[in-house]
Length: 182
Ligand SMILES: CC(C)(COP(=O)(O)OP(=O)(O)OC[C@H]1O[C@@H](n2cnc3c(N)ncnc32)[C@H](O)[C@@H]1OP(=O)(O)O)[C@@H](O)C(=O)NCCC(=O)NCCS
Image 1 (cartoon, rainbow, N blue to C red):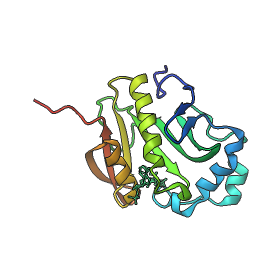
Image 2 (image 1 turned 45 degrees about the horizontal axis):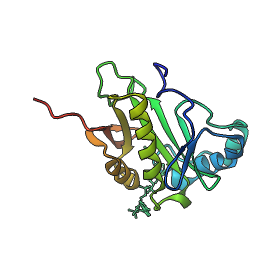
Image 3 (image 1 turned 90 degrees about the horizontal axis):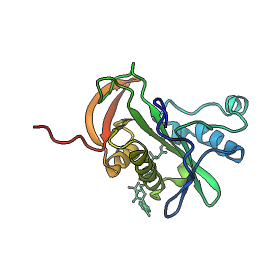
Image 4 (image 1 turned 60 degrees about the vertical axis):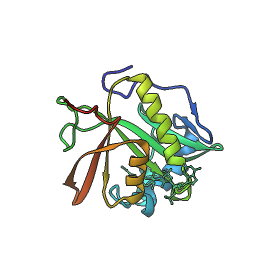
């Protein structure tokens, strides 16, 4: 368990009904490049990155760090989930000292519409809740990102606020929902 990270790391690989959540490996490199070069996957997260730049910049074992889960379907990577500390300088916080852990997700477009992201995120949140009982998880997504907005609601995130950032309206939510006041 670390103060800055999401919890004890690395966790043992976690199985869900159809998926495996695990650390990244060298064999995931092609899928990482495909994911970050994808115009569909990048549409609401800063846009796709040029393939040539990715081929140069992506390390031999990409994404091997605390908080990043590779989502594996039948031995192949279909996406990534991240649990990282939210930058205290950005808008959107639920704790007075900031430093909340934030959920991020990005899946290859061919894996959309099959419930994989929901299945994997639910497992990552359950792992986090066990590793850091009582700690909230936050999430920020563009309101125009319909799929992401539906996923956030399905996972049980509730709205805290909306604000403008990167020239777009952002939805900022928290999980689990805050206890009612009073
Ligand atoms: C956001 C993102 C992860 C959502 O992926 P997704 O596949 O739509 O999400 P889910 O796993 O919740 O799947 C939901 C769909 O699967 C369908 N589905 C099919 N089989 C299913 C099953 N067995 N169980 C659950 N849902 C199933 C649901 O009906 C739903 O369909 P719909 O999209 O037509 O409503 C994906 O669009 C993505 O990677 N986007 C790019 C990255 C990004 O924008 N990230 C946001 C950063 S904050």
